[in-house]
Image (cartoon, rainbow, N blue to C red; front, side, top):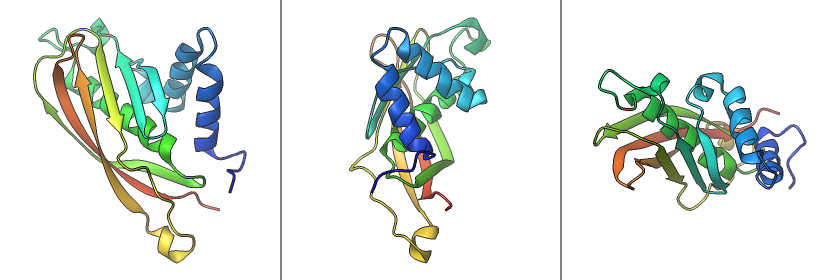
Amino acid sequence: MSAPASDPVARLRRSWRRLRRLPGGVWLFSRLVGRAAPYTGTIKARVEELEEGYARLTMRDRKGLRNHLRSVHAVAQLNLAEETSGLAVVFSLPPGHRGIPVRLEIDYLKKARGTLTAECRVPGGIAPLPEGPEGEEGRELEVEVRLTDAHGEAVSEARARWMLGRQPS
């Protein structure tokens, strides 16, 4: 079953596959994601790698993301974790499905300084929901996101719970 042209997941996949090969394409794709989700776009994360079941993003440390302790603000880290989990989950959705975060939690392990890298894997992929009334309730999926600094040391670990459902017809 192929996805309709209006399927946002299919558009995301097509955009990534087309743009990632072009000079400046990764930057452009990252900005487009930020425009689609304006608040998320404020952290100016860069999508480094994106495939079904996996996303890796980076976020430069800059003054606008810092707290009074001169480290990356806790909410900027959570925002990066949410964006990373969202791309990993949405890129893995079967045609005609959608997802929305319903819970985010994070443990801060040390002060975050410098460029941060966030990685998320969707374990085992995402099976399609049944059509009809059984699939309308949706189901939850929890994924983990690890944020590391330039030395590869973990600065925070997040869990994002997503509610998955079918796109309305």
